[in-house]
Length: 378
Image (cartoon, rainbow, N blue to C red):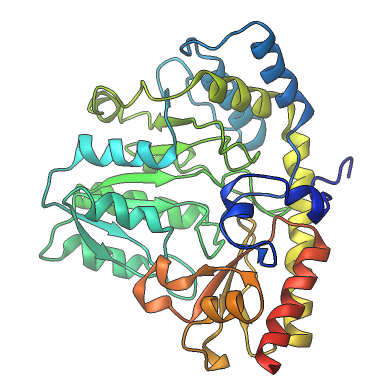
């Protein structure tokens, strides 16, 4: 390992004005929203500084971001999307998912999701007058039989929103699962739309399979971004990528879908993808060690909490049902001074779950579990 990205002291982190560190009082340890406790990569900082020195603050142009992603895809996954015809720059991942829904479905249509699921998946469906069809994960994996039943059911969904890797469980879908999903969507005429923002955030030795690298998914569309993998959410930008058989779907996007990305997002994300591939791999080695640490700490201090370690993302999905708490996330925040995501945000039936952010120093994770255990003793 050449670097230790997760080594910033708490005192330094508390100087930040971002959501993670300002939402709650200073005595609360924040391990909730998906921001990472890392410093900006030097190459990203240099690219931004160069643009500032040149007052290069206008509208973005060119294909640099698309080309950087295509180069990364070829090197990491032996996948070769065409940056000129198959990749488009957009504002961010969830606005890209919304644009795909608006372009490919109608008000009143049904859209399939897999709870527990990242909350904006629900918001873009119900907030834009579409209806949800829910096919929950089974043992944290896709329910292919459930998807078939939903696709063939009376509601006749027109789109399926896939999260890959899955947030919040960290599930990394297999090539076989993705092929089966692609075949099902083709059989029933369902648009397959995927969020792959966590694509580089997998444990060492784990294979992430890009959806569009699977031949059966050539009709699909994917949204992604460097914002999550390199902690660049403050530079809002993303990409839409179409499958080789989905040119008509890219053309169907609303007219402003490709005009919402910013200049600094293009610059920062491009620099990250071009110059910080090793950095993100070092990061995920640390996150993987933090997952092992969390398993040990829970076994020692909170054995009733169920944690199914998964290879994707830097998030942990914890089942607190056995603790007998009415609202685990509220309890841990008010009694233990640890902020975790409320599981009910990922689906109303998951109120006994919490989501923990493991992109933090081991000392902070250790302190968090100690506080959580102490809160139960009190």
